[in-house]
Image (cartoon, rainbow, N blue to C red; front, top):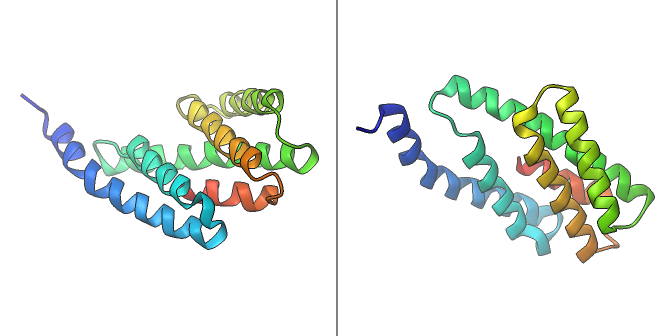
Length: 143
């Protein structure tokens, strides 16, 4: 028998993912139309990761996700402001991000913060002239 909380989450995931995708898509398109679908994808992923069985757990998870994404966005923007994309730089930025997340005790969201770094860095590799802050800010807001 499926628990009521698990059933509630499974019913909410589809519609909330769709709304998250559409919101992320439209918001990102305000800054950089070419990466709008990535913005929608990141928003949907964030929603799926954050959605928990209770509102209290969801709020707690959302807060940790926001902090982790802020760390990943800041590390990426700082790196890209000084140096262009490189695979080694991306790996180093991911390592620093995970270390910081573990240092502030948000272990569960350190991997998602590292994903934020990878999305920002790969976006920079596709569009190297994009301002690092204009690259990182939408990624943060998508969380």
